[in-house]
Length: 119
Image (cartoon, rainbow, N blue to C red; front, side, top):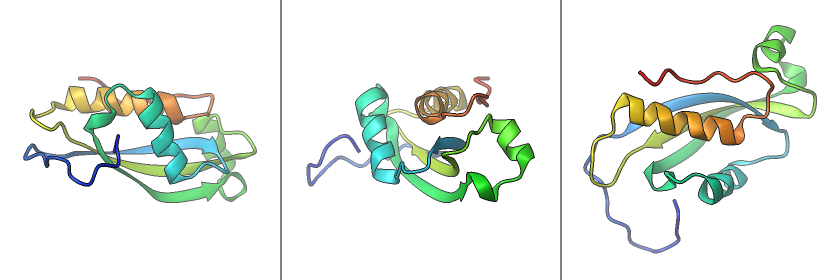
């Protein structure tokens, strides 16, 4: 994810998936999210993929969802699936949750944080 070379070694280590529900600016897309992670996440080499599973506009969510996330108008909610895998070592749940939390803190623009337990 960090470069455009045509070949990269493939890890035989197990992948870990984490789903994140985030409030982000409504114009932000998958490519821009990748750019943010490449620029600001030291563990970016462990992010094998990111996929936006769904996105929901502020107006299409109930007030309880706005309150739970601290969501404001001009934002949308996305469900982002991360696949986390290190090239040459197995990651623990604590490792994966730490990376997940760093991604969450970088991207989430709501006023309420929902971090994963680091075990």
